[in-house]
Length: 139
Image (cartoon, rainbow, N blue to C red):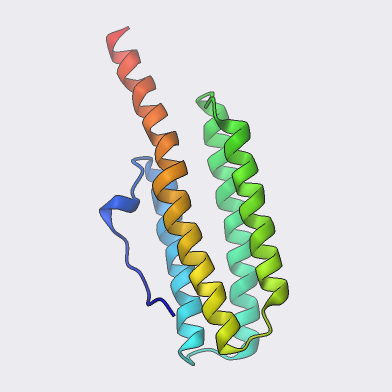
């Protein structure tokens, strides 16, 4: 199983509110790893998974609101990615029976999701916003 990951500069997209939410999300993902290491009971894992689900929905909703505020041209595509991620996460949760093997898979899925989505898709949002700011300075 992948170990905990710690916040790195490469995860920052440059939008403070979203970066702060990403930091919190990473803490929750690392808590899944703590469960697999035997630090939590099954009830705690179920509550942690529910917390992750609620936090992901909150974060995506917040991020999507930000996209609307700046008229992000890839809004629809990004929302579909969020929907796909939540759907995959729901399937993963449904298939998890709280064994260490399943929790390892869940943790790995969440780390991959976090790294890939943040570094690729959310950076596009950040780059678009930076372009808007630069164009406003010039215009």
